[in-house]
Image (cartoon, rainbow, N blue to C red; front, top):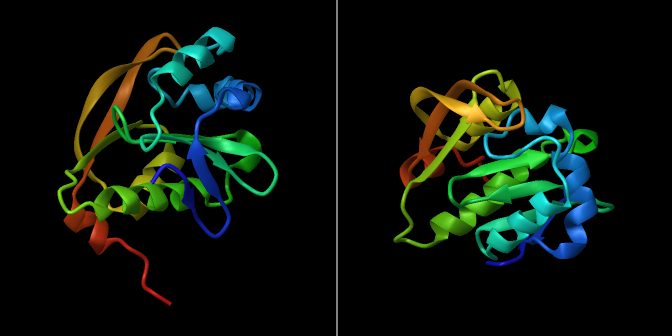
Length: 169
């Protein structure tokens, strides 16, 4: 489960060699403004701290045919970001389906918690496609902006995941 393959993507454990691409992607305020724990600016020290916490099977680098496209995580909660030059291609949904399929493959796997800032329409669409259900809204600090913003809390159960799988071809 450490490396996951989709038709267009490879999801692999985060590596030190990913530092330049991750710092460029998540270091862009257009990305970090939608993430609660990521500071702005985002530099080598921030990446090193993330790499030290990243665990295979819980954190993945999303790569396409030519570059790092983003990062996706299951812990401490489900979350993802896609680099600005890779957005709009369906990568977040494709990567998320692979990660959630691996998670729910375990019959004992529990529900997944997630959240997104209320003004993040793209993340809301991805969560909806995957079957997440809102559980509430709370103010949460966005470190990149240095302010509290409304965060929509989400939960995904195995039953909701199965109900939202795309039809088989």
